[in-house]
Image (cartoon, rainbow, N blue to C red; front, top):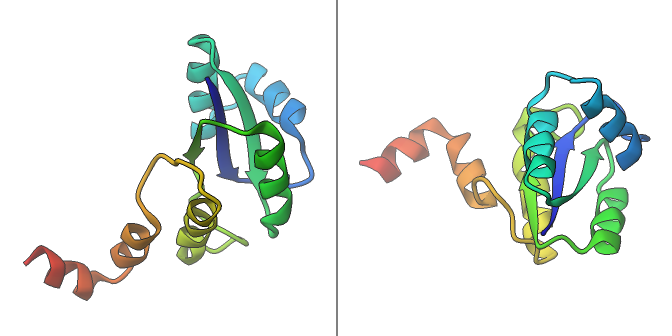
Length: 119
């Protein structure tokens, strides 16, 4: 199955081969652990780092046509409070993603709203 692993990165100019080289060198980040596990199960994996722009991410995903996107983004443009934005764009483009929905990520940032919903 084609699975894309999308994650925030310090190297947005890297391509899949660069990330896979890092993965082979046993980089100790969650996105590499996820990709290694998926590859070991014979999935076709594309690693896509998210920097300050989403256009290159969308181009890479459109070219690859994954069945599922593993969304490992914890930040966008170096800000954790914008993590929901990546999930929103992936959702708007029709990608099936792992993790919380954009609304879930946004609501989770607001403690008082979360408490009201849980109550």
